[in-house]
Length: 164
Image (cartoon, rainbow, N blue to C red):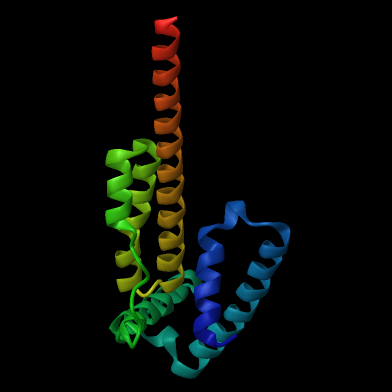
């Protein structure tokens, strides 16, 4: 794990500390000790005590923010030679209108997440949202068809029993 990954993992663990497992808390402590030794070396080499004073957490936040700025300035990896996954937006809208509205709406919500996640570089999240949109669109379609068949069956039964 390189320095940048250690900083990101430390911040992730720190931000979720109350809900960490005991193994994750141990990992947090090990990362903290490792980064504190790096922090001490940086302070000695750069003479940081003579200039701006940082405490350890302030230094971590500064390094983390610099990493995020660098990552955000890089071109979007998702856009390089990749097409976004299918959104399923139109099919989910159609099944919400004509088949089963509650599940169709879940499909619409997931379908609307696909492009935004892809454009943000979250290809895995875009693929997951696309899969969920497909799943809920199909569930909505099947339930809509089942309800229509049951309705037709009940109408036929009702008309036949009314003639007897």
